[in-house]
Length: 323
Image 1: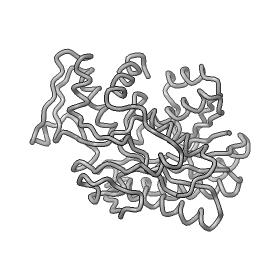
Image 2: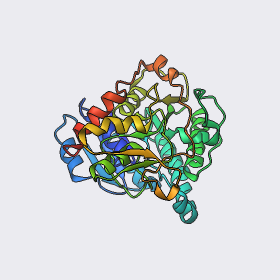
Image 3: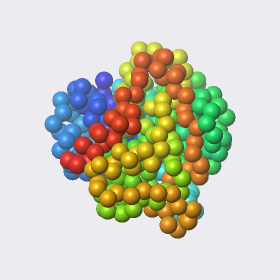
Image 4: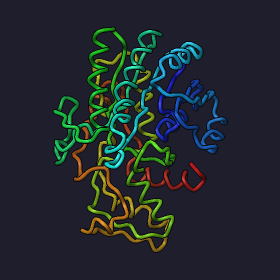
């Protein structure tokens, strides 16, 4: 197996590369910017070679030559711009161009070069306001994306479904719940890092944590997401086009802060009704219902291993040594 990860120099791409390279798989990371030096050094110690390459997924000639030259057999497509309102106002064309035309370039290149399987990474944000509540969200639920990034993801999901029908391409979508992990850093393509990471950064800086609400969510730890993506890459047979990836339980940011507190004496956290006082930016306007991920477990056997306690322990251990 030779794997291309688009957007591979972001934190999920690096986490997946670490997982695959640890098992001897050659992995090519395509990204607009290079990964941090520490990440490269860490990946270099693993059995499988990891090759970071600069490139834009919309460059079809570059993409085609890369697939051919490296003998790529599998693709994980996660390149995206995760935009906040300010970027949406000024860069709408770029956000949607990367999302829609970028995904189209990857899918058509995969068809042309006979790639064995494509896994497209999507987000629970495609549900929009329909997700607010507590009833678990199924793969066949209605969507109402309400940001440009989510609109782009919803378009990708539909495009993959149709192109796979037309061509016979083996391609599936992995729709992830809200992601966080120890390898997060500012790539310039995400306007806000995850809320759990923001809480840790505030704690490290000795700043109080002020939240607009408790932030109850099915927070997905990146190493678990990497195992799920590997399962979708390698499953002998998949019977659906879309799979939810989620931890199966919810916890709040207040719970997370309580797990951070022993490492940061004096850490304080509280709720505030004043938007100007908030120190943590949450991804949604209200808490989202959890994703129902039973389909993934039934077809691949994947089960998450990081609950709140395990994720906090692993996160703190890894960030203390730079990832």
